[in-house]
Amino acid sequence: MSLATVQSPQNVKDRVSAAEWQTRVDLAACYRLVAMHGWDDLIFTHISAKVPGTEDFLINPYGLMFHEITASSLVKVDQAGHKQMDSPYEINPAGYTIHSAIHEVRHDVTCVLHTHTAAGVAVSAQKQGVLPISQQSLFVLSSLAYHAYEGVALNHEEKARLQADLGERNFLMLHNHGLLTCGGTIADTFLMMFTFQRACDIQVLAQNGAAELITIEPHILAGAKAMVAAVTKSAQGMGGALAWPALLRKLDSQDPGYKS
Image 1 (cartoon, rainbow, N blue to C red):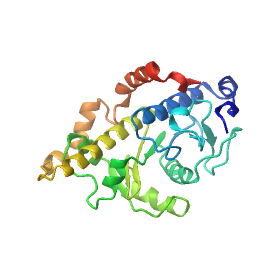
Image 2: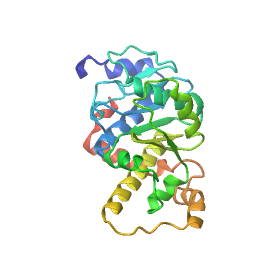
Image 3: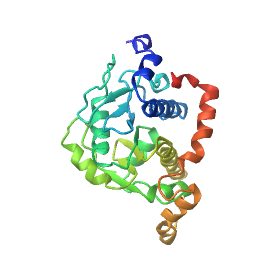
Image 4: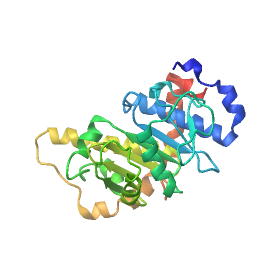
């Protein structure tokens, strides 16, 4: 299926609310930014965002690379995975399982972002998980959960266990699988993943140095949530609104096609 077969941007924009269109633009930008940072995995992995005022969510068309995704090509589905607008594309069934599970119970969450990066999977395969060895790890450890690997996420019975493991936290390490973040905005969710990924990159590099690692003192870890709020100027979330405009300026200068 070629990109030319996707509905025209104007056609989609005219059929949705202004709030949904803005969410589509921001989510498409998030896909392009993930590709720009090298976190994509061909057509696999996924990012979703709730359609404002509904229980429906937007997710990538299965078959497009992340750098190809546009606001108009995103697929809108309900909680049962049924398409709510015509699209020549289906959605990744494993993506549906993971994202619908979180959107179903976390009504504070707008966006869910999942990756399979080399460093992320490497740390997810370590029994100790994220180590308190970097400033970035503090942000992650302040709201981190783990979920055991159950194979490719095609079994809907896994949803309940994933929901229970995540609870009210915003960072989830899927053992032997990858990383996931969820937040109240697309901007927050992207910044969380940037921090999560950087913490994993640092951990793998530090371990490769074959030197004894210095761990952050427990009393500093205990104050991590307060430090996150102070640095991001946000009592909730990650303060993504601070970085998002700058990220969009960078994207607009290099890859503005996401808006169509």
